[in-house]
Length: 251
Image (tube, rainbow, N blue to C red; front, side, top):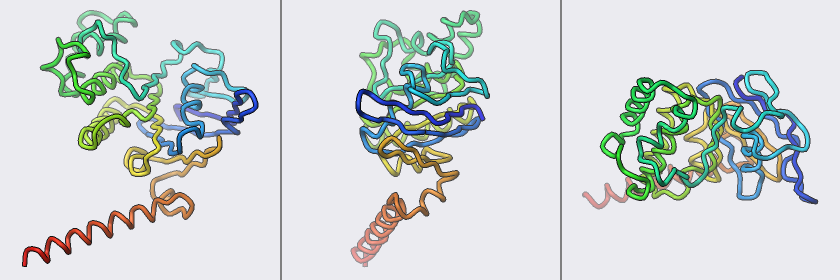
């Protein structure tokens, strides 16, 4: 496993936020974590990234405990809901930023950045600044900047929540393609049931600071407590109703 989290606990004052959270993520796999606002999802991501210290428990990368490592030493990238691009840098410069910090050669930066812009479909926007981009384009650039350095783990905190449905669907597919191509292990946090099922190779459900994990989508869908089966039945019945109405209108 690339990432292992074991028995993480966290309190803020009198409030217990995380209670014995345990999970693992393998190479090229995505664990979706589904849960309502305030259930502890974001705190968990920040602990893995090194932005918040747990009260107890362990975070391991490739089997090595990293609790004492600074965030910048972990090679873990946290993507927020907002893209948070550098406003004074162009698209190309934003994507290349991590490689420059790591002092990659000029030829390597040019080659890898050019390839990434092609994957993102952003070649024609390379010289634009963030204020000239749409929300979906900004998120593409944020993904490119995160993935180009091939992090150990990519942490995504509801990254598509502010996008319109069409752009959101496009970004979901783009992320899955890039994660596979670059071999990224990731945690994908969302409060949207359909998105959790679509994005995750495995799924976790978080409530009241506890996490229940499922080895695959079907195991989660079949569980009676989380509403996946009912929602899928609803959408299936809606499609059937729409098809019936369209047929009736055509005859």
